[in-house]
Amino acid sequence: MYRRRAPSGRRILGRRGQSIILLVGFLVALMGGVAASITVGTVYFAQTRLQNAVDAAALAGAQSEMDGGSANANQTYLTQQNMPQAEVTVSNLANPPNSVQALGKVTVPGSFASLFGIKQFTVRARGVAQYGAGAVFDYALFQGATSTLALSGNTHVNGSAHSNGNMALSGNDCITGSTTVGVSGSAVTGQGACPQTFVQVPFVSMPNWTLAQVTPQNATVISGAGCNSIPQNLTGNYIIDCPYSQNGPLNLTGSNVINGNILVEGGSSVSISGNAAISGSITVYGGSMNLSGNVSEAVTGKGAAFAAVGPDSSCSMSGNISVNGVVYCPDGPINISGNPTVTGAVIGNYVDVSGDIKVTYNAEDVQQVPVQQVSLIQ
Image (cartoon, rainbow, N blue to C red):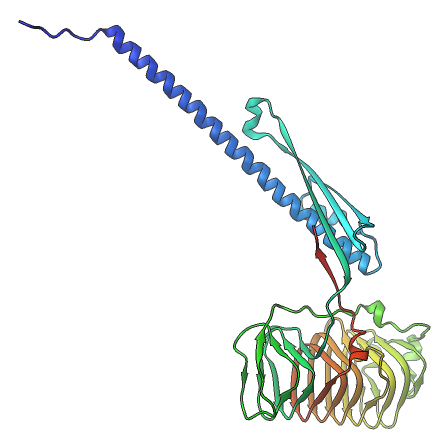
């Protein structure tokens, strides 16, 4: 009878030994793959953070250069905020012109790659930003906020209008130029004086006048005890630095004449009413600008005719106001009612217009709006 012979124990052990070898090889390969993945992830994460750091440094350096400062101003702070362990150097470039370069370097541990003798990796990144004049700011009426720009009454805009939010027109309003908005959903109610087509465009940044740009040159300074007796008629350039708590608002009433450029600081507000005649500009820093009555401003080509900038600032116009220049309130609201006429532009963070308002775009004034920009080019 045929008997089946039991397999040799030696053969069984041999097969088991081969399985163990294969398993060990598979585990080594798996660990190597995991180690490589972790190492690549570590290097990629460091590269991304370093690129963000040098991009921020280049943009900040270009902004500082554009504002008249140094390209490497505040770079220590920027590096600490973005990637403290990195080495970032910032310098100006001659080609392309008006550009700033940021170079970064950081060392990251080799992680599992150290098992193969690689202790660390050096990651490098480069960013280049350029500064200069931005696109032409050609809006007769501009709202920087993302809320709704509301026009009611008989508002007539001879030029283009933009709101970073919606735009709502009611009554007999008319905008003769392009009408652009930041979001969809704008509407026209009422008959209107002319048809409107709303075009949605990307966010448009508010142009920025710095305090240095609105500070009049060769100015006479009124402060301290002089705040108790500010002349009603001012000829020449003045800086009025009077705390609101000391002097209250600067009130100009009646047939006042201002011939020059005035900067009001100290948180004071300016109220001009009556038949005041102004030849020049008035800027309030940290307060409000209020115009009422038959105020007229007669000088063109001066940029901002009436401006309120800085914290807690606002602008209001009511009555038969006549302005040749830019009404500018980038941080607060502009409220316009009555029968004002503006030849130049109305630029505000929030704009509310009602009444028989007429705004006519004047390139001579608006071209002086300091639209500057910085952008990454590499």
